[in-house]
Image 1 (tube, rainbow, N blue to C red):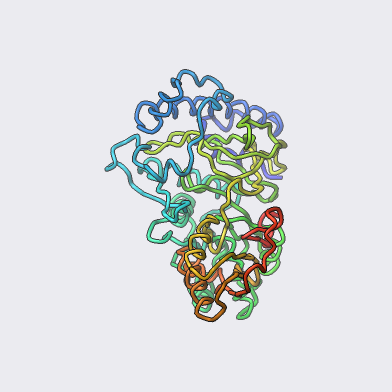
Image 2: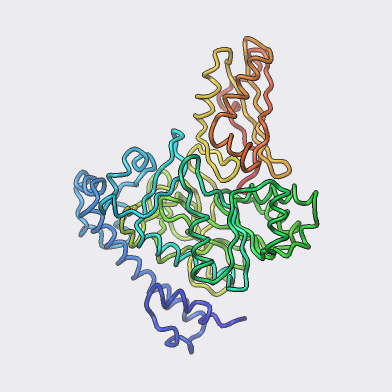
Length: 463
């Protein structure tokens, strides 16, 4: 096995200002324990700094602490974090400016993610904030994927999120090109035939996009060429759940290794990724702190236990997040990874809310379907089945109606297609098939509250 110290040296040197050669004589086990002790002390100091900065400069957090009768000095240990209420996505969505800790003119980028009302949540970053994320992304790309100047990377993450900007493509492009010297090929998502032309022209070694888009390309490109002959060795997947069965399908088709990543725009976008062992995603632990808490009691859980994931940012100059509630369920894997990295690993298990992942990395709250379908007067009740076939999400809608004809059927179809996330998946990323609508007479559905579900997801996204 290659020297673990050499592999960690860039991370340790840039993040904790340790001298790599001080540890060259240490065993891997000793070094990892030494690193864990240092990183925990580092994280606690950063948490305290974030809290002081937020209390002094953020209207939202200053008022929150006052309301709870707290002062920054009350947070002395990691366990003291539970004294602070969660920051909810609605808080950020309703009044993002209240989180600002610098004047608005100092912000360099604004990225977006989906919100419960269909309006995106906006996360603001100063140039210093962006540079730190780019640097962290480059370190992760080097340590986990071995990206270097010999690589050619095709990045097709969508740049726009509706009319807003989603930051994955920008950050990866900068990190891999500017700091690691790789050649990056970035465009909007192209028709399959044009995508194949791009691949054959530039011969990428790495491909990066959301899982559903890669899966769609896998199915469609196979009709045109032998994917194994294209020379792509690594595929970076992110922004949505990736079942092991789907990963295996992609890997076998391309004869490539597929690596899963994780991130939340509000916290820092590119937050965790798999190494070559593919047994959990290593966290960028110098960028934020991760708590796993009991969804009911709020108690911090031990490593290995499944709970709600809560994040606190470090060194976020313009818009820090304290105890941001991700609504994701997951666990910290307690054992060290066999790859040698001492960074903790995370495993995502699902969600605590009612978000439905759909299409090309988008999410929909279930109430959006209520709003769309029940706005049609003829509809009495409905049920939607989500399936996945040949790289596309299949949306099958069965609706009870007091009028059964093509006019009503078309109303339902149009109402669903007009949802921006679904429209994007059908027209742009090609990751969603046109909805299938069936009308049935009233009282067809069994109304037993235990058995009846309006939305049934058969895609096994978290297997």
